[in-house]
Image (cartoon, rainbow, N blue to C red; front, side, top):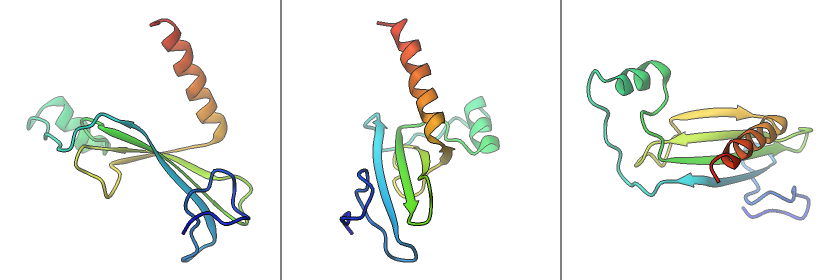
Length: 115
């Protein structure tokens, strides 16, 4: 469902089934790969993927925000996907607005050294 007049300015998909909430999802990184290659059996990448629950190679990242009517602040996540895995995210990082601002600031400071 599209955003309603009472939605947050960032709402792109108002959810009414089960809850009444504002929702948005944006892909913020996509390397364009459509298929994933499994890490070599026994490799460090394969072990990390198995033990940590993280994909061996992240090919796209989505930002998701959702806020129910009674919530003061939205719930925000960064979702990490492997190529070819467009249904369920491989890993999910719950972040708050201050955490996203710090990430943005830190990344910007690092990138200044490379420009």
